[in-house]
Amino acid sequence: MKTFQPFSSSFSRPKKTFFKTVVLLLSFALFFSFAACKKKTNYFDYVSELRSNIFLAESDDFSLRIYAVNKETPYVTDGIKKEVSTLTEVYLTAPSGNQEYSLFFTVNGRDYGGELSFDNVKAEYYFSCTLDVSQLSSIECRIQSSEEKITLTATSVLTSATLSPKTVLKNLQTAESELFSSLTDKYGFAGEIYIRLIYEDSPYYYVGVIDRESHIHAFLINAETGKILARRQS
Image (cartoon, rainbow, N blue to C red; front, side):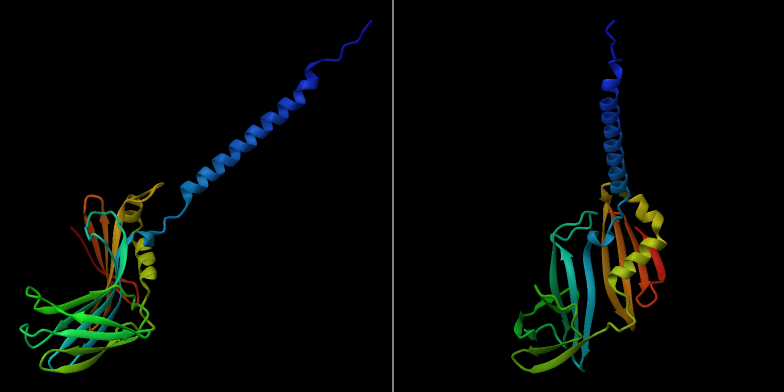
């Protein structure tokens, strides 16, 4: 009598191998999907306005402020970060707004400057250009009108104790984790962030967290300790 081997055994091994392969592939897919969902959000990527340095100078008749700024264009408080430009903004107060003033300065061997515009509402002169001065410690400026020429050296308010904007934002995110979590999902952060260095006898940070409905959660932060000094919602 002819003996037949059970045919099932000849096919069981490939089926088992195929099943194991499918399970393995699904496991990898679930792992990477979970990892992608758990990926930490870099909130600094959503900063649409950053003022990272301030330079100040004064004389008997003039007061000079220079800001190192990164700012979105167009500038709209709508909770959506747009393209960001790097700027140097100059503000000058003078004895009178009737004069025409020009301002010039040199950075890395290149000259910048031009005629200053006068803001009747703020009663100050203004100039801006595309330039990054955030890492400088001082800027020597030449100011001239038809009647006079003066030189003012604007010095940075930053010290070795001043926290960086990234550190300030990281500390705030930890302290206000509920706020940031409420605006964050697997797609990222549903908002934009303003970080402005300000100076009133000593440096502080203003941080504004803006959602898609243009609601602003504003914080005043000590620039050396990172402590939240005041908060406001509007």
